[in-house]
Image 1 (spheres, helix red, strand yellow):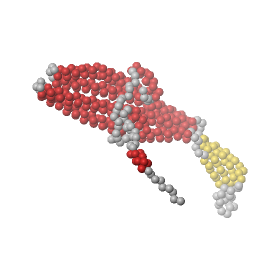
Image 2 (cartoon, helix red, strand yellow; image 1 turned 180 degrees about the vertical axis):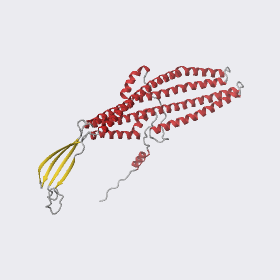
Image 3 (cartoon, helix red, strand yellow; image 1 turned 45 degrees about the vertical axis):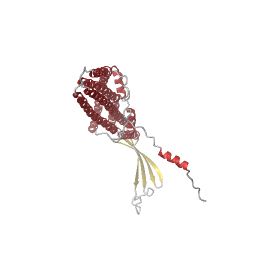
Image 4 (tube, helix red, strand yellow; image 1 turned 135 degrees about the vertical axis):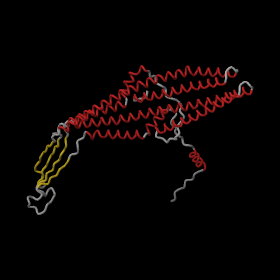
Length: 425
């Protein structure tokens, strides 16, 4: 019996065509805010992925570090010629005069296995600390690059607004020149000002492009991959210079570099203790059944141990371990001191940039806007020359750019503080 053929009706065909014609819902481009970039970097960065694998490998070494070594089995065929009476040599256990089996287990001196396990744990903590340090460094670079991307993009918008304003001023100058109220030089100066602004726009467009390239490189994306236009900067937390003591406590508790150095000191301490334990012997324990013919009719036991006689070599190893511990402690102290200095510097810079932004926003910009409005009104009334009007316009742009740069610098300092603290504020 032949299977029935399915007939596609015109209505079904139209619905299928409409379905395939619908565009796929694309995911939004990253870049509108810094959080989207950080999430993408955490998921796709290959260096972080490699370090995670290394940390997992280090954690797997913990169990093996404290485990006993595999036992060994020794087989000895004794009297294989049966005191010269055998016509041929047979190496089967049952045909020899006797066969001795020895099961040997190496046993380290008491405490060595625990120290090896603790040493492996400290090394695994170092690997995890390196992951956290790399992530905090990468996150700080992304936050700083995004702040630059925002500042350059916003500066480009402000400069285009200034270009539009200058074009309006040119029209005013042309109208007054046509009426014989001002010289032609005013129109030419307006055109020259526009040329200079367009030159600034080229530089800003190039800076925006470079910011995108840097961000894409940090995100492990192609250099020309599209990014969304930056929408806003992160809100600055209420950090004051008076909070330095509490922030220093956070730095001691959470900074990944300090955690790594502390784990390195711990590893050096455990290694020194393990080297000191080498003053005592390790053992090999053995159990030996003796086979004669097809039966086991005797048992034996064996204990052997090494004799730690090479005192000169052992003392050199102990001194080496002690020096390595001292080096780890010195490196930890130097790192702590430098991190505290960096924290104090960035807190001071953050406070300074906040004050600069406050002056630019609440004092410099309103004054520049009032000066421009007064100069524009005076130029239209013939009381102010065109050069004064252009100067007032430049001061207004400078005030806006100063506030914008202060915002970008504050974001950079915040990123550095968060890198030092090992957490977002």
